[in-house]
Image (cartoon, rainbow, N blue to C red; front, top):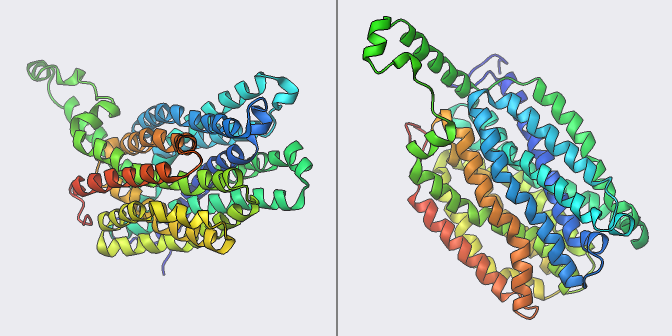
Length: 458
């Protein structure tokens, strides 16, 4: 195919490949950083940073630190969403990549409680907050870089490719931890081996920066900016006397993106918040909490759940773009609802399968749960959300919906650990929480309106 070919309204093929690569690289760094922190919280942060507590309480404290980062993500979403809608997706994403990469690298250099006392967990919380702030602006921009540059008929598939970075991030994070855990003794792993996954983020930061700097701004954003410039030029052609008569049109200022978002899309912003809950909660229960539950509560070798998630995420590299491809033919909403319904029905069976303590059964539960649950929703989520908001407020809309719902997702390992303690070590309260959240999302997706002039909306 001619490299300068433009399919419908998309970028030339060569430019589109660069955009997809840039979005994938940044998203990979985001998800790698996200999952190594979650995995470390379940495996090592308790004894290293909260050693005065018993194992269960230490795990809860570690997951609380994990959840703290989600409190900063909405602020990052609003701040970077504002600049992403005002000055562009590309430059904003360069800043988010730098913030996330540096803060993650520094976590790998932190002293532990044995070396610095209370300063160790305090510094861990500070860096987690900084990381969360940067992550808050990453998702919306990475999704928009690809979807807004793609032709309408392929936005489901191309929009799912950066989402595949979630599976790649899990695979890379769990793979690095599994490798370190397998090659090092317990003493070596707890002493310095846990730092390796965090320090490796520096390599991904350098690669991601190089790719992002050499990409183009999205087609939708450039078109929207041209419209704004044309409107301002039209105002300047109006005689001064008429400007005063028309309510001083020449002095009129543009509204902030966050204000425009709630003015134009009040219904969809709250429905998007609710829709995303099943995806973020199910992902954290199956991955972060599942690993901790098996290794701590059931006292199984942590290599078993790490291997399970490694296999599940490897399959996700194929299932995620396949789901995106299917969504271009049947629409995003039906597939999202299927994922939420699956989570609702699979909540109790998931823990029944884990309770068998059989490695093959556990791997089956993680593979099926991950790919038919959060991956099913995550693959089509950005394309569905993009079609809910206008171009001028999309970065803000996606970031707001994603990051505010992420608060509950980030707190899920902490909530699940607390529910586990409340249930005397039995996971049925956790399963009920899992199923209940899925019902909420199912209802919200059904109520979402996703046309806004997009002919590809189903």
